[in-house]
Length: 201
View: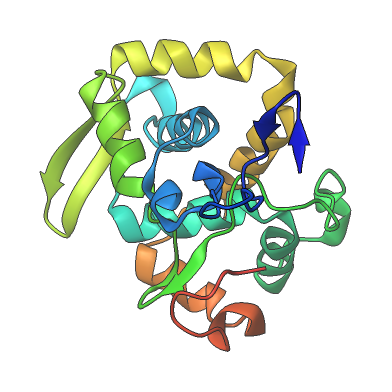
């Protein structure tokens, strides 16, 4: 199929090989997106500060991935919070029918994972928005002064309101270790029964 003389991505070209939409190739899953960078910056910033302006770190990629999964999948966030004793009346802002944010995550050895994390974190660190430091149990992430300022600007943008509301719930109720969060997620059949590298729904 053509429009204006151009072959649409993914359509077979007459007499030639099939052209693939670059966003549908496996390699595309490893590339960072602006949406993913903004979301992870907000996530790391939400876990970078204590009361009275003290700083802290989000401890490790396992915890980051599990928190990001719950941030991206509102239906599962609601189920996990209710399982941990949070009243459904306090979760009315979470729409369980809302589609997952960004591309779907995959089942890996330690639960949900996104192959683009290395590129996204590398971009945030390389641009001086996030810093990483060795901790006793791995590596920790926190926003720099510039990253904190940018996160504040993003929070002021109404388009990020659903993410910000979920981040408040994550920080209040699910500021646990990565292994604890992993165990919570393995109580969800969609994760526990998924095959390795299978897209999670």
